[in-house]
Image 1: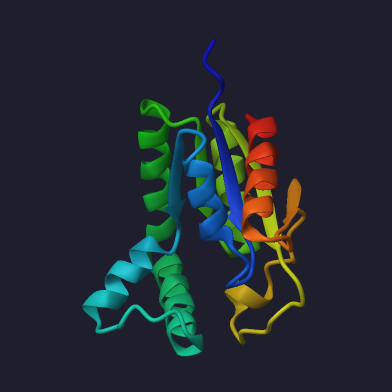
Image 2 (image 1 turned 30 degrees about the horizontal axis):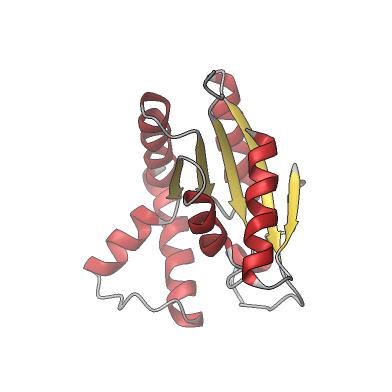
Length: 169
């Protein structure tokens, strides 16, 4: 019997291990991994961004991402296109990286209206670092369905993360 498809909107401040944990999950289950920042990264590269995720680069991406949302909603439209590919494909879990609480709720509601299952997940680790941009500094301003504390050694955290995600499927 095939398991149902589940969208998990994943969030957390920079450096908490979101990407690493998703990569670990990809080793154990059919996973699609997308981010609402992807369109902004593509535009930023054309504008000369060097790909560095330092404070300056992160601030640039946040500002550009917000402009793309305001101008023509490109990040949301991109995510919907990715969701359609997910529904048509073989992956069972779709991780969607979204930072802004309003955008999280909007995408979650959109998936649920389409009859999909969508959960939200906050990754935390250690003391909170202040990055100086709204995307990183305001991740806790949403009422997530789940939280994962990524404070253990990588191997142990990876196993626990996969178990947690497997329970959602």
